[in-house]
Length: 112
Length: 115
Image (spheres, rainbow over the protein chains, first blue to last red):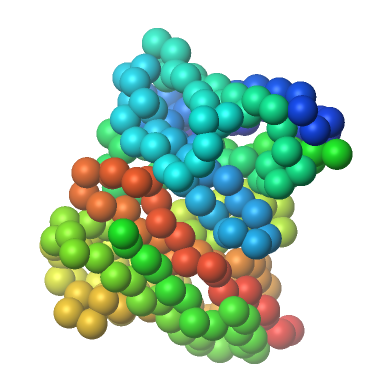
């Protein structure tokens, strides 16, 4: 069974721009969660989507948004990028949102 | 809010020896899961082992085992016969039974394997 895939793997953007990251979950998994990893803050939960609905949300500003499609693929969008948004963005999938989550390789975003 | 604490920023062990990584957590929930994830330099987060809170028996996966002390809210990871490939950041993580708030991670322990 194929694992979680994320595209692109690397991105360089300029402050003020917006960016969209994509995640394809493991086949059969309906829940997709997004996490931000930075050296200072560690791993932080952004949001979770299940059956095309945002079910849970972490403590991030409204510039961070996402969506999920009928095939469970998910996208995350960050608008008006700030330097502090530079991070590794990890996507994880699970069957139901409970229990273990399986992670993709991440997207490394650099904001200059 | 749930918290997960890993008090050892870095640990070092000789190849083939045993090492234990510590983790404590705080929650008022009764239904939850605990995990250890491994993140090697490639940054790929890999699930090592899971433990359901309602299970009294400690989980084991080959050379990896946990010591789950529910009353003490402690969840340590023991790695036996350490191998060079075990070198990585190890994160302890918690999620409530309903999955709300996603995974809460500790700050991680950097494990170094000495050949």
